Length: 334
Image (cartoon, rainbow, N blue to C red; front, side, top):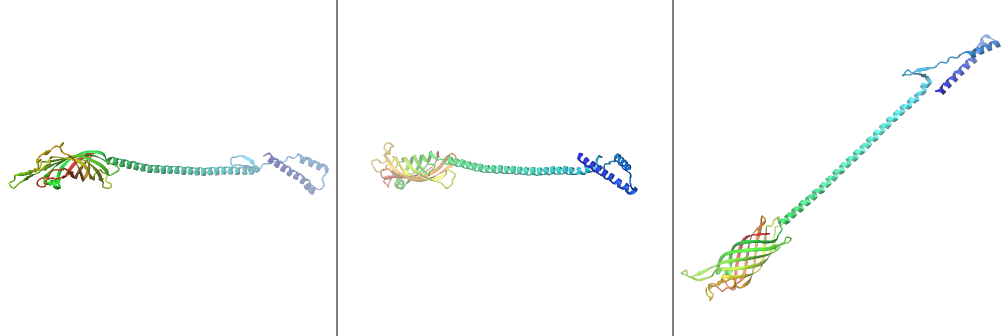
């Protein structure tokens, strides 16, 4: 402010000098010649004259008084303040925009993270479900495999036995007892079957017209040990041990008791087990086995042909072979 006041003082001094310079000219023009003393006096009086300096003041809104030029020159400062305020407002707005952009970016990142986690959870659940399904399927297959497991078995059966071919001429039906045992493969349909059996066929009597007995055959007992091959036939996809099977093989036999007719020296004589000769025979048959809890219920029938060397009955008799067919029902356990 000092340089402004200096400029104002210089202006006032210049104005005063102009005023003093103009005063002698006006006096001489009106009064004519002036004396030197008068001029000096006037100059002395003029130098002694005090010039009144006034201030142009402007009252501001706050009641303060200041020079008009100063107030005028202070306006750019207000503009500068306003610009500063505008810049601050702009900076705040820009920061707000940046904050909003950053918040949106964070939100998008969080959404992407949640979506990725959800996708990962979904993928893990999918593979877990596949793993559980595989485990359940494996468990079911293992349970079925155990359920269908074969291996070694033993059983007990009984039924009827019927004479066949020429054996029917001297014998009628009887009974059978069989103890089967064997081994069935799990991964194959093949198996081995053995059994011990006893078949008892009842002898017949031959009578004449007066109903008198003229010939007779005693009851026939056939002791057998058989060894057969076994082929199981499962229905496709059947989750059970129920199946049909085929049997075939050979055995050793003893034919005892009433094996002789009534026409020879040994007619009517019973042959003991120790005295009977061991003979070979063969058999073939089929059966069906049904699962019944932890056991199997089976029914089967086989045809046997056994070399017996029995004497002929007078009416045809038994002859060289004994032929018979047992039909049995039994249980077997694995």
